[in-house]
Image 1 (cartoon, helix red, strand yellow):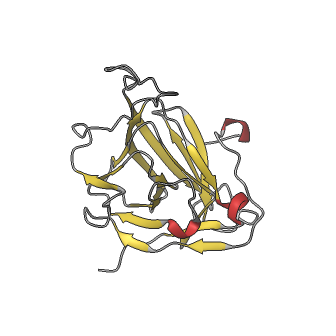
Image 2 (image 1 turned 90 degrees about the vertical axis):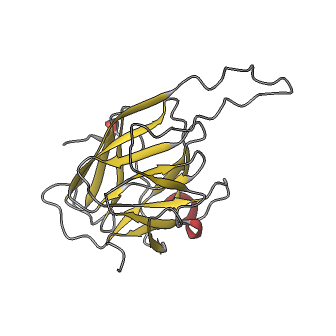
Length: 220
């Protein structure tokens, strides 16, 4: 898989040399309270759709403003050298999500290398609806999450490790960084609101650091 910078939905912010390593927990129904939940059947699980907000004192008409529905497709991830690329076919976007080394030193081609952590430069949330990610081949992954609120900071993120046996559902307005597979290549079923609004935080630009997500399985 090849990308040019022009195909990426966002050009990464780089040039900093500081990390904030997140806490690391196993994803469970208890640990995910407030963020979302684990999902057994991705096709039957309902995706929350948020009604379009009223602009003044007149309310949105009943049975309107939430009819965009759900889109779905394969969310593909590749580690190329020390760089993580992804393409979300549900919404037609391509990304450079992060690196396993400082970006100015990270390789972006060739075989993947041993990885201790992912350096993530941005996160976002979706105000229009929830998002469900389901590993199509049972592959483990990690994702940093933070509870809603636009005054987010790196310190508010927690990295959750999903063992690949179930999917992960994230509520609307919950911040999420990159979904990072532990394998070199992974494919997830993605289901989310079709409007696909994004509100983002740029860690490198706003806080002078990258979010560091540990790449390991939780201690048993």
